[in-house]
Length: 375
Image (cartoon, rainbow, N blue to C red; front, side, top):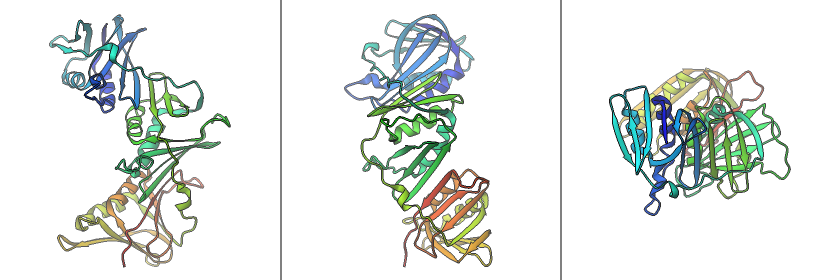
């Protein structure tokens, strides 16, 4: 194998793939990236046996061939190079990297030991812009559970309808849902209409697909799914199990609501969170509809107390909620709009719904946050 290519393209590809690799004592090759020069392109392949990815990088191929090298070592070397063009050449036992000023050689891994990345059958469900999928997952992923004690909650749920798809995440304390509509959905009665995407896969999809502006195809099989584009192919296992019926917990009616400036609310929460108790992270949000004011307050024995009042456009009764400021900040950040709508079910101890203000009849995103119940 011998290729010439641009540093920036190779560096971006390696850095988006490096987190996938997961070496084991019995299979060291899982720490590697397979460089496959063929048909005028360089294809980078990585897998950890749960996720497999192929990325195509434009290159001038002088000699076809394959080589496998540790991806972290290669990525570090490429990032440190100053020249624009790079020569890569497979030599016996490794990979030679050359520029005008630098010459290095990385010890290789066994090409024959590198696992085959599975191919999903060509049963396309829908197609859409890859970057839009990345944005949707990125909006809901903060609500995923961190612990793997519940694999279904440490994941992103994808539900496919007749006119679009929904991406959902919840850890039991908050819930985020993003709708993508206007898609052509293949109507196959025998096809799975929902899947649970593992958390690591979801995060890798954000990293990889955020760079793909063209349309990608989405495929589903019984135990795995794949996303395929012109220069990218990602395949992953599906989490086995049933996702919670999250729609049941989304309130249908609200007694109080307000429209608030996103930046003002975010800055207020950040300010008063400095005074929140470290063990509970709680802040109090108090809405006064008659005065069109939203007051955010926190106090603790260790630090003191702080509060800030924001002008809002309110409707309905007074309301008061005690909220985890970290979860609240996530919800504010995830709602992509300059103005937000906050909806309160009743005066206290019921969830808070955060939506972006939009001209549409129904927003395409919601974030539901459970309060901290206090006497």
